[in-house]
Image (cartoon, rainbow, N blue to C red; front, side, top):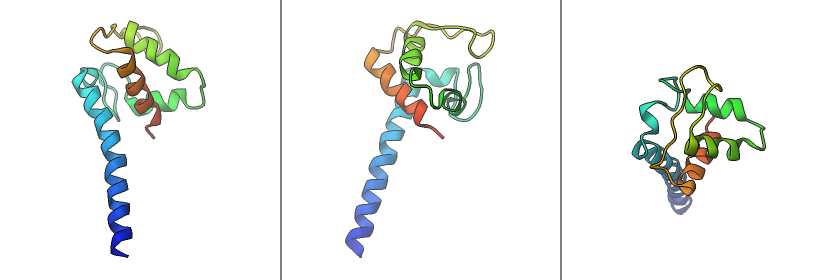
Length: 102
């Protein structure tokens, strides 16, 4: 019983650590200057992005491009600037994390 509880706790920590690592990446790449997980700041909350693109099979590719090159019009009049400090691999990681939020 004790071993099962420890194993379950370890798995939970690993899973949440992965999610936390992606939140940390979002902070490190200045995403959180304009976005938050739950609420609109300048750009939409990440959970709103996940909800808008739920079920869209092309969402990941579209959003990776938007992270890297910027864009406008999807969420109002404030444009999202290009993010030269974000690599393509980092953009994919960030977008997968955002789209996984509930």
